[in-house]
Length: 402
Image (tube, rainbow, N blue to C red; front, side, top):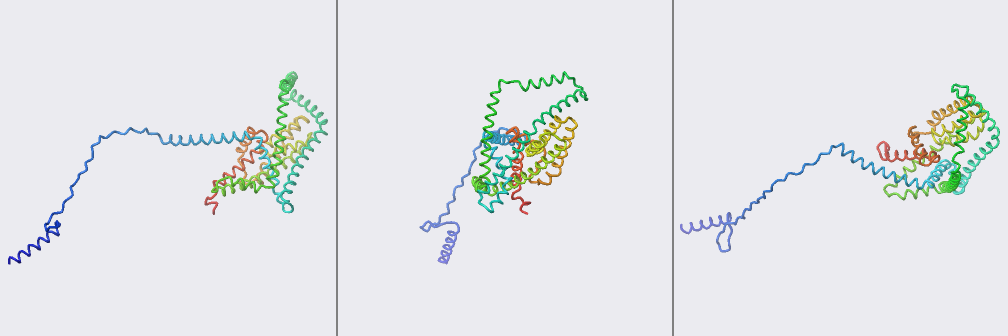
């Protein structure tokens, strides 16, 4: 029994060794050491009150964000405008050449089907020069032949106007008329000391006009001859990712410009023919030169037709008196109404149509920037920019993709 009890005790010792201990190599059971528990203590930091942030109203934050961005845009536009004004003598002839190219490019394309492109471009350019020279020759011939009759009619017309001022509703005395005439003569003949400066200014202006004329001729020829290559080179100046949009916007603007120029030529021709016919019926002197002036003036929408038409009314007033001038005014208004309400809505599509207020403001800006030439090119440039903005803002939209 003693042996059996010893064996049982050993089994129990082995069981306890496997459960709660390990053998130290000498048959002695040692309990597993327990790792000491380390308690982390957080140092007590005295809380410091954060300074209170000044609460700026949301509207003020938005306004300030818009303001500095707006100032950056205005500064960029001022730099661009300054650069354009610096190169005015170069850019204005280029813009005129682009307008001429938009007008005669279809004729050049037709001619190029049967002859080399360079020859077709040269013939188109010579045709434009011939038309301009022919108009100038016609105006000069009319002025030369009708000057004597005009002088006599002007003298009679001034006498009629003076009689109407004296005996009409204004009841102006002869002494007041003489004083007004004397003041006008004194104003015209005054400041003779600056005559040399004026002549020098006229000479410089004439030199600029001649230089601009040569730039127009050369630019028009090469645009007609190598327009596609020049446009491809311009597109390659932009980043590769933007070239497709630039090319699409440029071609859309070109379509808009060509439509605008052709429609404007038709409108100007109708204005010139209508006002010339009215002047011939009323026997207004220099009716043909007035028609040429109306044709050129009609390239400036709204303003140009009004100013050139007033020249016809003034000529009728000076030559034949108030009644004929009133009849001429009615004829001018009738022709302009036909142009404004029938021709322009029919010929000009929505893509190139501008609001009348925008037209007036653009023409005024063109006059301030570059005088008469600026007024001529302001509206076509605005039409192109309008088309470019519409293309870039609508490209890729669902409406376009559908």
